[in-house]
Length: 407
Image 1 (cartoon, rainbow, N blue to C red):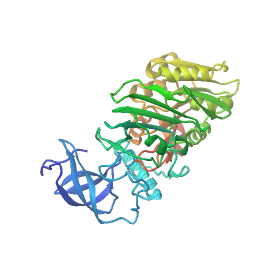
Image 2: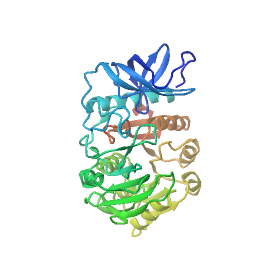
Image 3: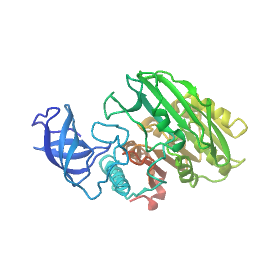
Image 4: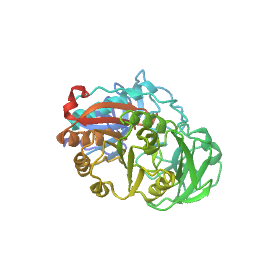
């Protein structure tokens, strides 16, 4: 959203504003002298004193430094490090959990209205407790070797002695007492059996992490199948996410189906679906990440009806001529026009789209609608409590079934 030309803001100046609504990305919208300010640590309806933290040609950002009129949904943060200028990992710790879910639903509705030009009804479903859910942490160390997380939109490490959204098996307070290599990235993973692994890399983007603690592979149980997951392979961060998302996707698949598992990773959805399709069905898993592809090949080596394809989804899809159901869980930017066009050309009965970004899902919804598919079901899950993130599962079917289309 571009701001109009007019008043020039300076970093550090403060203004009294009224918060209007939530914006995509963990900010809230306010205006001062006709200019839009994106504010963190606020709630719609509040009057706050905002401090300008950054300016640019298109955006002005700020932090709510003083709450003049508080929302009834404001609570004391359960984390001592969640405050303006503090740890940037969580956006909504100052908001009641029920209101967090309402705000996320508002963002989904706004993205579909603005991008897909359609009004939808959606409720963000509660999943487990709001704390102690995260099984994957990417932390950092400062120049003194203390572990912590970056402040929002900075490279400044805020040392912390605990992370209240981390699962207890990570034992973060114990990690906080250690002396770590300076200016490093620390990747911490915990599996469902309680085991923990730690890998350390230089803070430079793209640097390769080396294992320093725990096994090379973590193990997760999905629908009776034991999945092996390398440290560098993606896995859902909420401890209940694999079960919740698998159940949501499974209802769209039948015995004997040929399923495409796009951006399939180590095989979360393939593991959940292999028992459903049965020996008369088959699954083609496509994944570009070499670590995840290697894991998937190990995980399904004993299943002759599961085929693992390494490579970019758009390229590998040209080898697939037909499928009954497509399951896709793309990266945050979405599948995109090219991949959607190739999926449509395969003529599936149904497309189950798992999305971690509602804006990308809304954009891809437009592409699917232009190609004859209707959005017939949309569910949203609060798999990132205390943050602005939300996970959606959408069902698309050919338009002749449009009488069930989501309103």
